Amino acid sequence: MNENHGSSQGISRIAKAEKPHETRAFLNLFAILFVVWILLTESFNWQELTTGFIVSLGLSIFLRKSYIKLDIPPFTIKRLWYFMVYLVVLLVEIIKANFDVAYRIIHPRLPIKPGIVVIKTELKQDFAKMMLANSITLTPGTFTLDIIGDRLLIHWIYVRTEDTERATEMIGNKFEKYLKVIFS
Image (cartoon, rainbow, N blue to C red; front, side, top):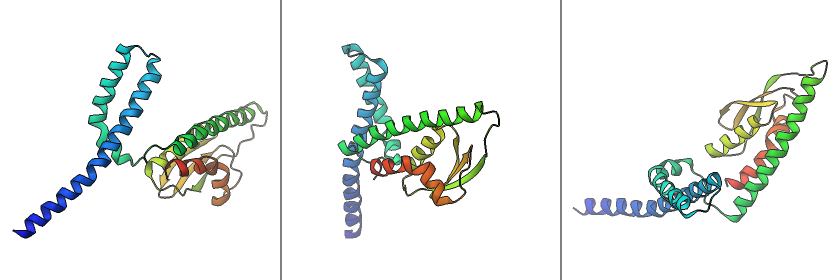
């Protein structure tokens, strides 16, 4: 009888430990959804805010377990700052890559040397790796084909190097240094 009582206490302790994590995930998800609602509606009308509150609340209730599985770290001012800097860096890299691809298209000799290179990442979370892969894909001239462990297969419109370390520096590091802080 003591064994059953001990195991039920252990289960109860685990359930209590998971509760704050679920609550934090619920609040984070609610905040994200509500802010997105406000940004999309561009309105502070009380009817719009009430509808956004109810929709965000309902979605947060149903999606909190999926949100927990993403393993996104809690919000901090530092992470928010690095995320905003990351968005600026991403925008600048997209613009630079657009000019590079436009040059290659307009040039009479069409100077392309396409190929597939491998880059390494130090990111551990799947969501962080996905963010890196999407950032690389968003910049014209590169396309992430696959993520295998700590390596990303990248199609590059003009392969400057096949060395993994050098390709990592040229393609991934400009994004990864910010993503490390955001997802640490």
